[in-house]
Length: 121
Ligand SMILES: [Fe+2]
Image 1 (cartoon, rainbow, N blue to C red):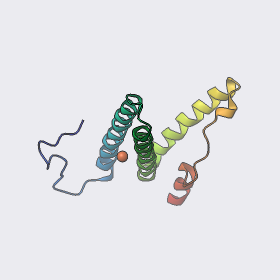
Image 2 (image 1 turned 90 degrees about the vertical axis):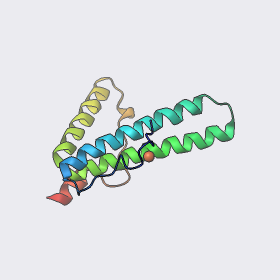
Image 3 (image 1 turned 120 degrees about the vertical axis):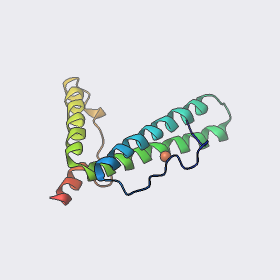
Image 4 (image 1 turned 135 degrees about the horizontal axis):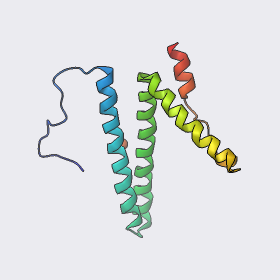
């Protein structure tokens, strides 16, 4: 939940290292997940069609923010990207073993983990 009692609580008095930035990005992702949870709860709590449309749109924008942050993390730390890919592959294998290949994760329209890794090498 927001903490506005101290408007400077998020300020840092120096530039941070990339490992520290990765930690900060994990916190940012947690914030996006919390926002999705809250917008979705409010979406389900109303029958007003305009409110539902707007809340769903905002909720889905937060999902896109997670994608942006995850892609930034992959760019900053290729080792972390390898773990993400490992998890993705594990799920793909499980879906294939269950004959649910049609549920495979669609390819992203933008840069992929693989393309970002190639850029760094
Ligand atoms: Fe967001």
